[in-house]
Image (cartoon, rainbow, N blue to C red):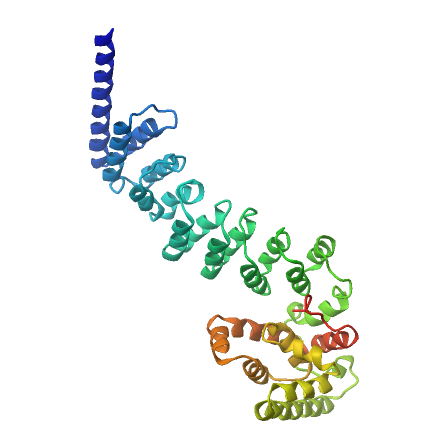
Length: 383
């Protein structure tokens, strides 16, 4: 009986070793199918391998993995993605392989860490980032790194990932991008982790169906959802020929072209004087002057021009007749030098300037009139 057990063990060892040698040779000859077969046979979750046999299997795969064709590497990656004992060097090789190979490891492997994912996003291609964005239960740090990539398909995949934890700062960036990227809007608004105040901000530029969804699923004050306000502010989005910087009265046809031009010149002169006041006397005096021009309390005006609220600053400046250059001068004056440098370098200035250009004067003036009746509070500022 003892001799029979020894014979079976020896036979298994000889058979196993021969099969590995054959797989090795077939793979080097460019016929890697057997390499995938042996990986499947030896690394199947139900395979009863000794520790030495498992170690030998991984050694063989280390030697062959870069010699077999892409599809074979993908087959091996599919198998290894289900295991929890893959050597780190082999796992790292597959993570950084072509996207087709790396995908199952990135998306499914329980051995992959947050640090691994951050490295893949940083060093890999946009395709690798899309794969990372598909992985369940992503952390806020990984989501933030994905948003930093700035690729539309990465953003869309992340937004579709219901289990990904997307931090507020990343959601704010995606909300800003949705001004231009219409296909982001439905994905963002349908996320359960979207804060109420960001939903309020998006209400201004989404379509009727999403406005209805926001009204039903978020804690939104009815006054903020006044359709006449968002229709006026975002008329420029639907009308490429919308006239910019026109006085509010001109829209009704009550002013001649000469009167409208004269009004625009007066606006420029008034704003020029206020900007000189800002440069000479500081922010407080400027806020007091703007409050008078806008017909708003100084406290409300100060909130509209706070660095954290560049969109409300844009609406106020457009309503008061400022040019784009004057608007930029105001933004800079209300930020410290280091903050301004970061704002410019991070693309914040470009985004808010695009926002400023899209708002027409009529819409901005209507928002200003609404603020006179119901000033924006600190927690639900129109953006």
